[in-house]
Image (cartoon, rainbow, N blue to C red; front, side):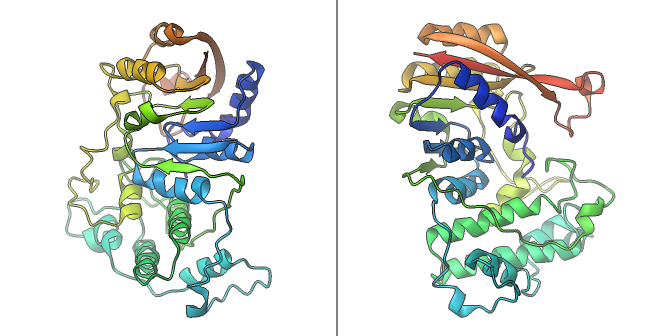
Length: 352
């Protein structure tokens, strides 16, 4: 899925840079897991993974990609559905996805609140999804929840299907990249019929552990070789940017407000979005976690200055700084991005 700060296109460069500094081990802790792309990369490299994120949408992805190591068999579900995939090589996941793509529409929370169908009475109807796709998303989400209630899914199968939904939604959302606003005209991709897509399963043969809490709650219990931090770098909290995906993941019918239908997020705020607390909490992590290497990936235009980060981390070992230049996030179309197309990813490499 599209996600601010997503390191998918930088992973090879990051791995190359830290390897050049002798960073290695068997255990990897992804402190702000987000899309899980970093954790997945190191899982595929054979590391035992522990990961965390405050957002439930990330927890769903972590459960499917990181904790889970097995292709789902859906033994409790397959006998109860008829798949029309038409593919003799289809996996059980392919068959379940195909079935979900064939079920009847359902008028649920997403259709009611994030499509013109349910919000026509508003001064500006919400246009996050087309009417048809809102009905499709609701149908899939409700069916997954019904299967779980009926105990037709194992825990890992449940989260794998949620991950399929989370990953698929962004291909049909009428947004520029985040969900803090919607387009007032339909993007061509938003009017295509929604289709659920299967995810890829990653197996490292190890017991991987995932969490859904404020990462600072875990610091005293962290024991790892590589502690990887990829904190927010500006004062904008992540939940407002991804509130709709969080609601689809939780499907908890929250009280929403405003033009965008924002869900409450007072309990899902990161202290790393405040210049007053970011450095303080970075020092808390560096001082109290048990690790051999602390790697922090940070935007060169972040609220914590390069010098202040180096000052904090150098108290706890030897620190090296690497920089990787890359193209600015597309949806950031204001401010510096109009005159400065490139930005630097900074890798702070602390060795104890």
